[in-house]
Figure 1 (cartoon, rainbow, N blue to C red):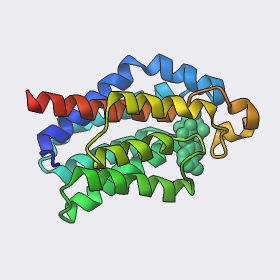
Figure 2: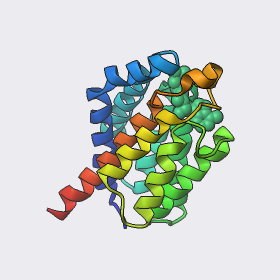
Figure 3: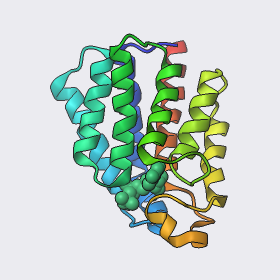
Length: 198
Ligand code: ADP
Ligand code: MG
């Protein structure tokens, strides 16, 4: 499936709005196993994305992804900024090369996060959301339930990457904050597709 530049911007903007609505909740999740700033950090990043869309008015799909990536990378510190920025840069690069299938873009974005973080599924990171969600999307059976269940599954995992890994066993019992914030990206995508089919 393909999205136009406008649809891609609508999708990412919707994600930004969800992040804004849930920033406090994301800070609380990060507070339990990290330094409590993920909501504030990501919200700064997604606000910058919206501003960049308004100022730069990207006219092509790769430019939309690139604009989002640069705004995220330049405004979010911490691991999540680098990893989310990498994901969007990968989508920019591949779409610029002519890859239009969103299924492929999301799958490759997930692989680039793994590479960048030297990490994989089961380590209680955003990958535990991106991997199952992009796979289900590629198989055309992504649902809100699947997204929620991927987020919930991170609760039982022990963190082995990033700051939360210092907690070892004590990281168990809490949702990974960036898996949660990434879930809004995929929820926003499902919403965007519903809008299109109306
Ligand atoms: P920081 O710990 O620098 O404040 P953030 O709060 O921005 O980082 O993001 C922390 C999140 O980043 C973790 O919850 C996890 O989802 C993800 N993360 C951290 N390190 C890695 C890694 N090496 N690979 C994949 N994801 C990671
Ligand atoms: Mg943090």
